[in-house]
Amino acid sequence: MRVFLTGATGFVGKEVLKELLTAGHQVVCLVRPQSYRKLMDVKGDVEVCKGTIFHLPAIEKGMKNCQAVIHLVGIIRPFYWRGITYQKYHILGTQNIITAAIRNRIRRFILMSALGVEKKPLTPYLKSKRKMEEMVIKNGFNYTIFRPSLIFGTGDQFINLFRSLMEKYLLSFVPIVGDGKYLFQPVSVVDVARAFVRSLNRATALGKIYELAGAERVSMSALIDRIACSTGNKKKFKLHIPVWMTYPTAQLLHQFPWFPVSPEQIKMLTGGNVAQNWQKTVRDLDLQLLSIYKYLEESGSENEAKTMVFNVRKPVRSKVF
Image (cartoon, rainbow, N blue to C red):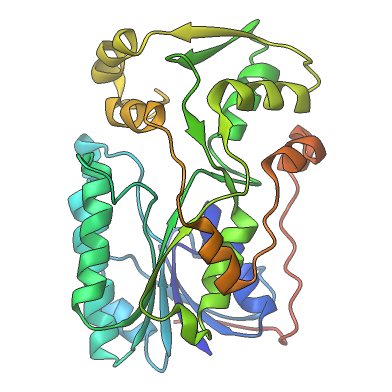
């Protein structure tokens, strides 16, 4: 199958690309002009479409002769002074992808959403993700929508943040917002990628909205303990910061990229992130979920720097247009 992929150079996108190539699909990657060289060493049946989700003519051209779209592009946090907003990236960008798909008569559309869009009240981030889902559904695609929980793996920005605090900055404590009892259900980026790719050719996945989550539910405090053990620190003092104390600082500094969280992220973090129907996803797509505990035991900071290797069956054929 010829698949048009957005977000191919991102954390999830790189793994989805790897799985697509391993499965023998042809892939057209929409990549920003300044980033396309990141894919030049990829071995497989890959074409690079230079452009962004805001360049409709480039998108239309890149989608020519494709049979499916996998749309991954999204932001977790807006920076208004840089023009990075949910409205622009989630709504307007997705509308361009949808428009190009319709003009190219592509029926199969797979979307990256987020766990929690079913909750009320919704944060601005989750509202925009919900809107993306509605846009895809109402346009009559043979859609599959995935709602992942916290995603872990090589290059993630959650596990590695706390590893850096413990290793690079050698802090004697780890800051935790609130009581740390709120639960997560972390899912491996490998399992996320396999779910996306396996859904392409499965009739059972048509018209479905799937939750993507791991098999274990773990509290924030327990997760910090596990991360500490994976870095060689058997025990790390956890400094619990009351939620009410974090909001003023986050409100003041969240528009600076170096500040780790926004008020909205604090709200979503302390609200937990667990799935209710994740077993259906596992059954329908034959997933063998990687344990967050096993991952932390086997991975260390040295593994995070390893270069991803593509193991594909297709011959090398790269093209830029």
